[in-house]
Amino acid sequence: MSMDIMYFLSCVLFPLLLLIFFNFLRHKQQSNKDKRKLPPGKMGFPLIGETMQFFNAQRRNKLYEEFVHPRIAKHGKIFKTRLIGSPTVIVNGADANKFLLSNEFKLVKSSWPSSSVHLMGKDSIMEKDGERHRFLRGVIGTSLGYAGLESLVPKLCNFVKLYLVKNWHGQEEISLYKSTKVLTFSIVFECLLGINVEQGMLDTFERVLEGVFSPAIKFPGSKFWRAMKARKEIEKMIVKVVREKRKEMEEGRLEREEDRMLMSKLVYGMIQGEISEKEIIDNVVLLVFAAHDTTSFAVAMTFKMMAQHPDCYDKVLQEHVNIMRNKRWGESLNIEDIKKMKYTWQVARESMRLFPPIFGSFRKAIIDIEYEGFTIPKGWKVLWTTYGTHYNEKYFKDPLSFNPSRFDEGIGQYVFVPFGGGPRVCAGYQLAKLNILILVHYVVTQYEWSLLHPNETVTMDPLPFPSLGMPIKISPKHI
Image (cartoon, rainbow, N blue to C red; front, side, top):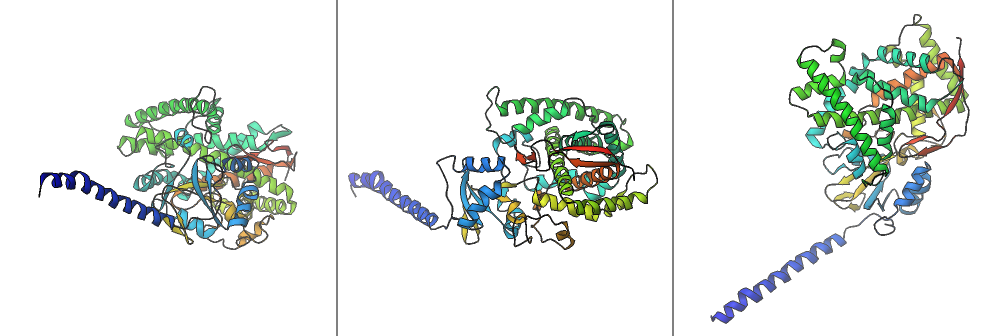
């Protein structure tokens, strides 16, 4: 074979054949992808998609009525759209919730906006996956689980009683929502973490929250810039507490009561080399946000529903009067008293069903997912919403009516999801329950109260809240 022919084969024909072969494979793969059946729906405008419609509806607390429901009616319970620059599939229903939330780390992983990740922290359990997530959650769970909180009940009661005496006594009008935010914020810091709340701390945390869903642009004066600046202040404060706590523990100066607190358990893990200082900081920041904002909204909506449904309020009051009559004067509640608040918890749960503290959360497909005859491509976002079951006639008869007795019977798995579900179910769920029940007990047994604006609307920025702060008129009660 001549050198010219050899040259032609090696330098021209062979590369050309390879190119044709790879083009064939690429087109075959593309053809296979094209055969995938994507969920129905419209992607909206290039890049921004339907983001503006989504956020406009969310801000008015009409996300289900104005965004989700019209698309369900048109496309079905699973549909596609484009949100915040990402192709997104929105799923609805208990089966979808179970499929998505129970397959965390297998089919999907947590997916938050870049601004949320920066502000909550890359080392919080919000961003951790797999074994590391399970380990950190386990450490936190020892303090936030039922067993860990049982011994905390008397302390929480004393804290709430002192707070009401200091901030409600002698007042004729207070903002229930704002007052509850201060209370729940203080409980997390002082009762759970053992950190004294100083003036201005809550305002600093509020500045961080303002930037959680804003564009991650560090331009001076922007929401994200102000939020990051506030985050650095918080981080500096927590670092100081962690290092002081470590020194106390290493020198054997830690008091026994403090030894049982969550912060001490986290610092002990750091001393043992199991947890980093950065993981402590990020998880404390996340815990504070998760435990006080959503809880204060749930409290506000519970009181709103009691005010609008006097028959329910009468039943709640009677339940707490009966508990109080079996206590000595000044005696705190215990876990057995909490267990007797069954109807109160039904009222709170029904309030959270109608007014969920979270609208849902985003996940990201880590592989191509086949679901309900459709393909959710790898890399796409998936959004489940509380409204997909909470407002669904299939799960709750006459879903827009307030009916606490619907919780007399068992509620199906992944149907009532105000705190999420699966491996990432809210770690502070039991603490939120205690905060709600204990506060309701002391308010309804010690105060006459009424809403000043019964038709006050709920708005979102970025979490839901009563637009006027839910002002109530109060006066001492004598039972």
